[in-house]
Image 1 (cartoon, rainbow, N blue to C red):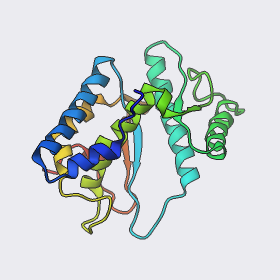
Image 2 (image 1 turned 45 degrees about the vertical axis):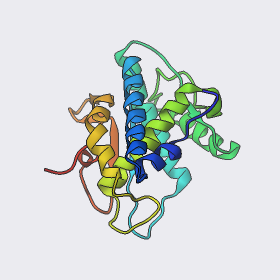
Image 3 (image 1 turned 60 degrees about the horizontal axis):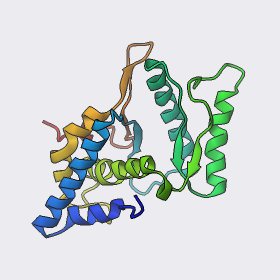
Length: 213
């Protein structure tokens, strides 16, 4: 824990010309998935695929994501007759405050609290002090990111592309799919898990885990 393994270090191994380095990366990814499974951990999140030449509004995107995760986390707690809190990796005090207040305004709105089993607005901390945050970061950076880049990335070469990212999806896609927390809402639609928002390409979220047949 004191030596925090960074996702970029693992991705460098994934992209390496050395077969041994690539194998080491795959073993780390497999061990990470096994660790989450061992403690019955579940995964939810949202992936935005940017349109060519278009950016995202960071604050609005992050606030929306936090509300989305809080909603799915609340359902997870309801199914387990439990309560919980959200602990996120801290950014700047201003950014943290905007996200916390985006949840606050939802929890204390006149129409009622949409997250009754989430006891508090998100708490923010340094990842160096929390194993859970480190695990979440590694899941996002060493598995979700390269799989999303392989599935939804453009064909142009950039810092976000690598011909070897497809292997991550092939080796670990199905295991990551099984880690999702998904549930049926009141209308009978599936919610939760890793949701892909691909406004430009309209591609299905199932591509994240495996190539199209």
